[in-house]
Amino acid sequence: MREGWEIKTWDDVLEIKSGRNQKAVENPNGKYQIIGSAGKIMGYADEYLCEAGTTIIGRKGTINNPLFIEKPFWNVDTAFGLQCSESLDRYFLHYFCLSFNFEELDKGSGRPSLVKKDLLKINIPIPPRAEQKQIVAILDKAFEAIDQAKTNIEKNIANAKELFQSKLNDIFSQKGDGWEEKTLGEIANVNYGFTDKSTSDGDYRYIRITDIDQNGELDKSGKVYIKSSEKHLNLF
Image (cartoon, one colour):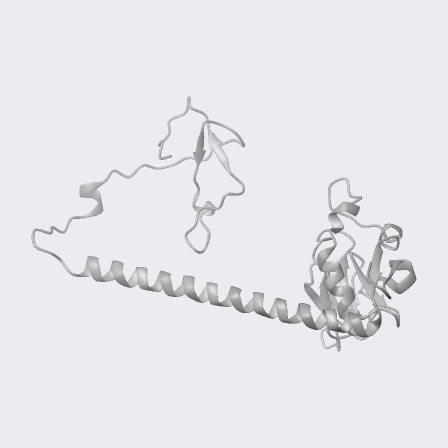
């Protein structure tokens, strides 16, 4: 470990603010956001539990997605707020949480769940405050570059799709010599699917309209199948 650094437990350097039911403070015109474990805004409140600059982690449900909240907020009972002591920079803590695998502390039998006493035992390296800020500045620049790269990639994909669609339109809107125009019924047979015999396993993947996402891609989750003894269209 570098000179001047210490290893401390969360219990030494931060306070875990447990969330509470919001019914008593809920107000559609309230000043403070009510936030759940996944960062979803669940309403507004007249009071807050966590200060601005708090990292929120899920107590139940989404436990491995730490979020930095810029303004004071009320956390519901499925979320923990992490409040730093004087020795710990709040942004440094957030980056540490992004690097930590909270799933290793999962105590849920079905739904993921974290326990406060386990979190308080987590070890965290503590550099001097000035060095913490330097580390945060370096990581800020790195994440900025990553976000910009993602944006550029998304733009390139969108441009490529637009160009591809444009070329398709050009090809099929301009008839060449010897081209004929026919209806779909003249060149293909239409087969109807069925759902009453689909199962979670089988010989052939059964494709439903709900398996196609908004981008026209085949969703790989929630697969269903049919047995080889059933009538089927074997397209794969």
